[in-house]
Image 1 (cartoon, rainbow, N blue to C red):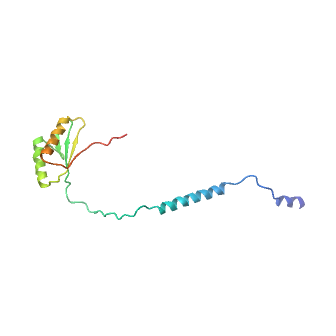
Image 2: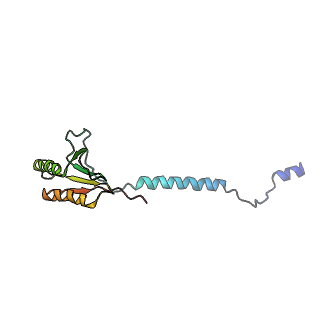
Image 3: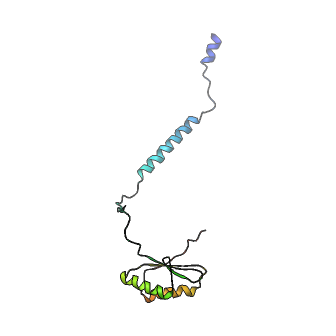
Length: 138
């Protein structure tokens, strides 16, 4: 037992370090830190208004004027002439002075046709006007 016992209890110095437990500890601390910081940062407390979940029974008030490449004018989905457009918009504007209108013109339509529609809106003093375009995709 002399030689064998000595080998079992020999105090040799270790020349390498096992880093696996250290990395486990580092990752655990990182996860705990991220979770605690995320829970601590909540921003400013604001009482937001509540929206009604019930669908609105009102019809949408915005009128859409579309101009096709051929020059045909549509009020919502109905084809109209420039005179009919003016008469219909006059009636809608009389019922609602704050009538919002959006104009959608095809990119190939002559600019003069769009200006004619804008002149009708100007004569009727419709000031809530929007021009619809496509979002530029980069």
